[in-house]
Length: 319
Length: 302
Image (cartoon, rainbow over all chains, first blue to last red; front, side, top):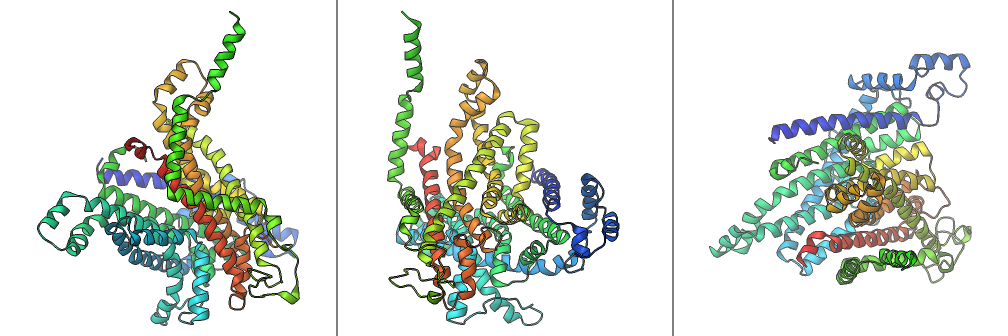
C-alpha cells in the first residue's frame, strides 16, 4: 500500500471515529442533571418564559433531532454560547487553547532533553549501574501522578527556595521572560512523567543499531567510541524515537486538565473544569470535542510517522 | 464392565491437568521467581494487600476523630506522619486509604476485564461488520484522553467512590478489548477451534471455553498495568474534587485538602503521595515483569 493510500485510509478512520466522538459527547452531556433553560434563566423564572426558551433552544424536539441540529452547527464551526461567560464558546477556546499547547510542547521538550541522553547512556552501559539508575528514574517518573510532581516542585522550588512562581500565567506579549519562568515548573512536572517511555525507546533502538555491522565497521576504522555512538548510531536510532515523542505529546496534552489545575494555568484544561463546575453544557461540549480532536490528531501523526519510517506495518492490513 | 467405572475414569482424566500444563506452570513459576522486577512488584503488592486487609488493626487512631488542639502537628513518635488541619492522624488515614486504592484498582479492572474481554473476543472471533462496529466504538472511546473521559463520566454519574469504579471500568474497557481481540485473531485459525466447530460446539462455547483460556496471558498483563493507571486516575479524580468525597481517606483527596497547608504541614501531601508512588510502582513492576515472563518470544528462545 502506498503512503498516500495509507494516509487516505487513516483519515477515513479518523472521520468515522470523530462521528462516534460527537455521539458520545452529545449523549454524555445530555444526560447531565440540570435543565439548560432553568440554568440560563435562574430559579425564579416563570413557567411561561421557561417554556418559551425551551422552544427557542429546540429542547422540546426529540433527542435525535437535537443531535443532528447540534452536529450541523458543529460542522459549521458553530459551538454556541457559553452559559457561564455569555461569550461564544469558539472564542473562549481559541483564547485558551494555545496556552495549553504551549504547556504540552514545553513538557514534551523537557522529556526529550532528559530522555535521549539517558537512553543513550543506558544503551552504552547496558545492564551496568547507569542503566539501572536511569530505568529506576523512569519508573519513578511514570509512577508518581503528575499533580504530585507538580505539588512537590511547588513546595521545593517555589515555597522553600523561591526560585519560581507557584503558579499562574503571563502572556508572552506582556513579559516573555515571566512566561518562561511560569512555564518551568509545570513543564518539568509533566516532563518527568513522559521521560520513561522516550528513554526506553531510545535505549532499545540504540541497542539494536549498535549491534549492526556498519557500527563494527566504523569501530574497525578506528573511530572513537564517542563519534561512533553520537554520530553514526544515534542518527539511525533516533527515527523510532520520533514516533514515541509524538505519542507522548498526545499524552501530555491529555493531561493538561490536571496539570493546569495544580498551577492555575488558564488553558483549556481549567476551562473544561470550569465548564463542569458551572454545568456549562455548550462550553463543556466544545472543550471535549476540541481536546479529543487534538489528542486524536497527535496520535494519528505518530501512527503516520511510524508507518512512514517503517513501511512493513503498512502492509500489515489490520490496525 | 460397568458404564459407571468408565465414566469415572473419563471425568477423572478430564479434570486432571495435562503434563504439558503442569510443565508450563512450572516454567512460568521458575521464570517469575528469576525475574527481579516481577518479584519486587509482587512483594510490594502483597505488602499493600496485607496493609489493606489488616488496616483497622494497623491504624493507631480512628480516622475521623478530629482534635483541634493537635492540628497540623509535625511527625512525631505519637503521630508518625503528623496530623492534618483537623488534627486527624495522617498515618492512620494513609493506612486506611490503601483499601480505597485497592478497591478502585481491582474493582475497575474487574469491570473492564468483564466487558472488554467479551467485546474483544466477540469482535476477534466473528470479524467482519461485528468487528468493525465494535472496534470503531472502542477507538472512539480511546480518542478521549483517559482522564477527560473519566471526568466526563463522573460528571454524569455524580462524585462518589463507587462511581469512580464505574467510570474507570468504562475508560479501561477498550484497552482490554483491543488486547483480547488481537489475541483472539491469532487463535481463531488454530486447529483446536476448527475441531470444536466440527464437534458442533456453539459459538459461545468456543469463544468462552476454548479461546478464552488461551488469551488469558496477554489479558492479565494488560490488566495489571491498567490497575496502576486506574489507581493513578482515582487519585487524580479525587484530587480534582470529582472522585471520592470527604471524609473518605482517599490518597488523592488527602493531597487535595493538604494543598492549602503546603507550607505549614507538607506531610499532609507527602505521606499520601509516597503511598501512591509505592502502590503504582508495585503494580507497574508486576505488570512489566509479567510481560517479560509471559512473552511468547522469550518462550521460543528458552
